Amino acid sequence: MTLITNISNLDEKRKETLEKCFEQVKHNLSKIFTDLLPGAVARLKLVDQSDVTQGCEMSVEFDKVKKSLN
Image 1 (cartoon, rainbow, N blue to C red):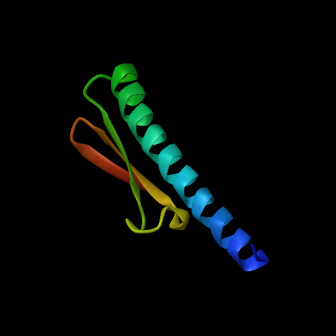
Image 2 (image 1 turned 30 degrees about the vertical axis):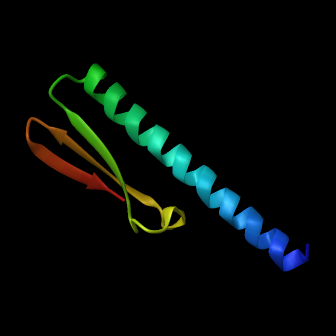
């Protein structure tokens, strides 16, 4: 294997790991937030749905009032 191939493989594994972590955090954040503050909702979404490395945005609703953090 060449160095370029190794770097490409590592980049792909990094992206897959980030995607798995994002999904777990997204699920846990929503559940914990709702458990701690009944009636409140927290959502996490990717800035770019096709690339997890571009970051994420969090939105929170308290009694139908929505605030976003990015």
